[in-house]
Image (cartoon, rainbow, N blue to C red; front, side, top):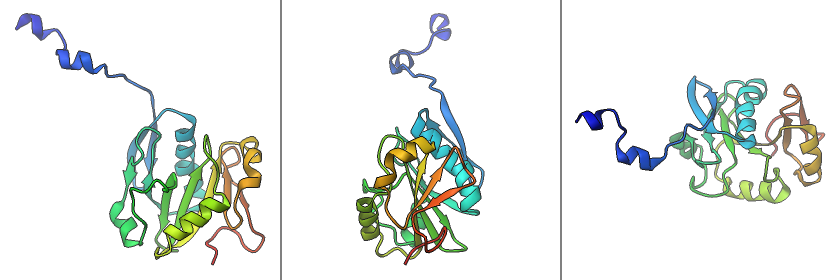
Length: 183
């Protein structure tokens, strides 16, 4: 007993747990979670902490994927009530947030290693969300203007662009109106 008292069990040793640095994030409503370390997840944190308070005041984050856990946070019941498509689908955007006062659903694509809200992506999401009861807002988020410039020709019309290095501004891919759903 004395020998085992000061030693970790073999199961813990073999598990080889690592204390990996994670990105802390506070969702609206003060729910705290941690994202695995990496540029994609850092940009997701900035969307939740910088973009949503500026351009989606009062939004509730309904879905947040992590690079190591595709469904890190999900409000499945609310998404189902809104008529959202099958939640196990690989077509989920990186972040989904809902403004219940305006009935707007923000579908946010984080561009770090994959592409923006392209015409094809927009078409597929609209088809999947044909029964959604909320009005849809499609947003592509970039870390910098330099990253934005790489993808500008791929971004779909009637979508929005947010760049983390200039968090107070947005680029609207349509001259008809500013942030809001398109009919």
